[in-house]
Length: 143
View: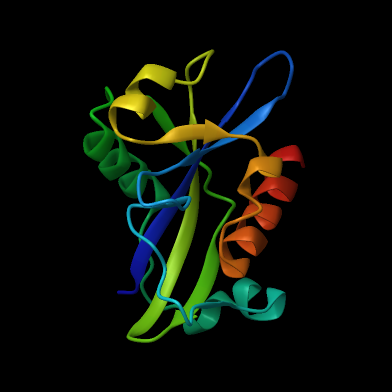
């Protein structure tokens, strides 16, 4: 099975303001940085699931993220329609998306973890592959 990462975000229920969780290491891929030479698959390859024999269920990944962050069960909701593939030295990486379910982002919890919720415009210093992933995630989130 491919290695996995998850992008965590919060979308406010009334304003639709969307923020991504930028983790302590400085990126948005939970829970570790992507290798330097990582490249996002093309859209055609991302849609071609026939070459993916075994993939992780995004719900399981959301549960792992809850545990890693010390969140209660149900605090994250996996976004099953979103999956990106990344080619990296050492193998493929599957990237999923999960949404914080609370009305407001857990700012204090993020701060305790050395993380922060950031707007898309505050991610300009991320590596190009993460910026492209966030662009695709943002398009998916907004529909």
